[in-house]
Amino acid sequence: MNNMMEIGSHRAVIQFDPEIGMFRGEFLGLNGGADFYADSVEGLRTEGEISLRVFLDMCEAKGIAPTKRYSGKFQVRLSPDVHARAAEIAAARGVSLNRLVQDALELVER
Image (cartoon, rainbow, N blue to C red; front, side):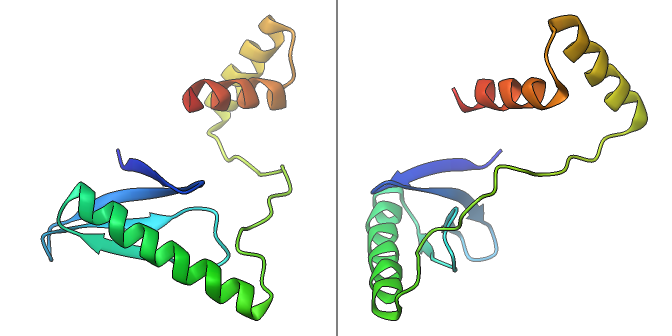
């Protein structure tokens, strides 16, 4: 599992890149790439702050919204067996499949 780091009000996923022996951070939900590298947590935070500031300044200068907009809709592909089981679970709870998935994702967020 990847680790997460919050810098400002933006989240970044952190991974270790064994080829270069450094940690790589990549901001999520932005309208462009804003990644950063460092060999320590402190370095990641510093480099992340710089990368984010440069990205946000560039967006402001170009009149671009820095964050992606999400419609609130997405399609999930499941095996027929998992789909059937999910429908059973939703029915047993008296909720829609959408509500079941939303509840499950909200649990993961906690």
